[in-house]
Image (cartoon, rainbow, N blue to C red):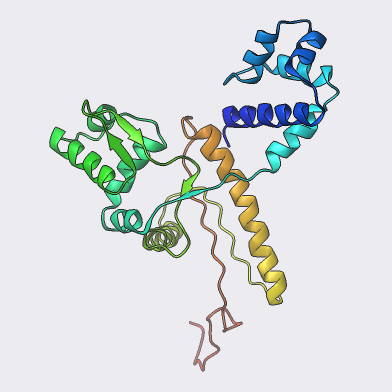
Length: 253
């Protein structure tokens, strides 16, 4: 959830608390020493100064931190790519990258065309394909409107996700054996755990990664910070000897 959306949610919860306590806008205006119009404008604006928000809470005896905790506890509903969209991205990975430039990186078609040295025809075909799979709509003048909203992601067990996982695992494997110092974080830890405890570990790992992913998507997609791929893999290994068998030998030369 972006800071702007969190602020809007704070205002929504604050207005609901005012209603629960039977505090009218006029009563709130009297306590703040401002006009009724000012109160209405503040509570229904897209932006409000943090100091004014605190002043409203204090004037009616509402603890701001309680409202903020409720906002933080809310998990945004993810919009999922459809099967048709997943198939298109799996077949045309470059189409997915184009959509990322539009949707995540907030670039317009002209910027993408220049940066990626696309022809006008190619740029048009990308946009029309995204419109065809109902991710965007194009106006007569070529203006792009998104038909989806963040947070946006893939459903489990989709073709594109499997392909991305496969590519990521290959990339990690290749990087381990080249001669460059990538300063990558790599951890391999054999574990022998009951199914319940292993499932708990997976769940906690997912929750931790999801929190950092939300920070990344909400605050840092437009930053100059380098991009990192975080690959987590857990699987059952039947051979407790890590794949190395004890065999007959003649020497160790």
